[in-house]
Image: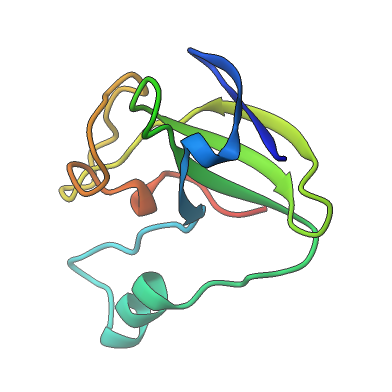
Length: 113
C-alpha cells in the first residue's frame, strides 16, 4: 500500500487519489510550435528515480497535491499543496478544489527536477 500525505487530510491510501502525472512546464501558447505542444501534451520522461508528480484527492478533500516520489520504490520524500495553472496560464490558489479538467493540473509551474 502506498501512503500519500495529503496536506489537508493527512496520510491516505493512494487508492483515494487520481494520478494526474509528472510535473511538466507549460509552453507559451503564443510562441509554442506544434512540436512543443505535442511534447507538452503527450510525451513524459517516465524516468526511474525521483520525480515530482501531481495527484488529485478524489475521494477526500478534492484538492491537488504535489508529491516527490521514487518511481521504483514508491517512497515519498516530500509532499506539498499544488498551485494549479489554468488555461490562461494564471496560477490559481492551492486551495482551489474541483474535478480534474476544471483547471489544468498539467500546467503546474516549475519543472520536473
